[in-house]
Length: 287
Image (cartoon, rainbow, N blue to C red; front, side, top):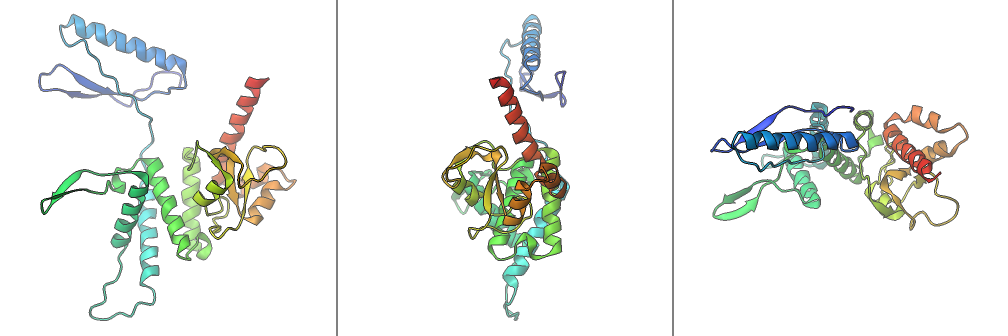
């Protein structure tokens, strides 16, 4: 973005009609963006002071994430229904049988996921006892929603229903991964962790969707880190690790080049291209 980009002027006035909050969107990687903001705030301060209003200006800036798509919501409920069907399989149906519904699955998964992530909804009082409600996926931004879907795919695979179990699930997974790649969303990004930790967090092959939770597959660096060493104990940025099944790893390492790998597994492209771009930029700075 070459100019300061506004998503719209969002003003919230206090009761006295003096102070207001303004929401804006900008690219903080561009120095000119920050200079424009400083200049704009300075002008606003001056104009408010001349008008005799408050000279205190509050500017809130947060990292922006695009809203999740409706197709993510459809995928969420399709996966919950699959898990419900799996849990109900083999249950003898009788007059008093209580079958698990997709809503039951959703609530259980939501509670566990939000507990792990430290997410909480509004406080409520039930029977004189205060408690926190679940935040609920309808309030998730795109990144959190994708993390929730990733959690559900892993939960499904741990029950023996892997991505490869049916064409429908595989197609769900491919479309979801492709959509994330198109948006540039990369899960488990930014931390320095060992290969062992990464394998635990990503127990599904990032190329084929094969379940690797039993210790299968192997680790690959997108940008090579040199020969030798034990990748299980070696630390690297999560954005440079890939957990691949044996077939996909062989395709990644073969002599046909990485282009063939990206053509076959396009949902890996955003992660791979970002890691390679970062390496080129870092290499250039070190020249």
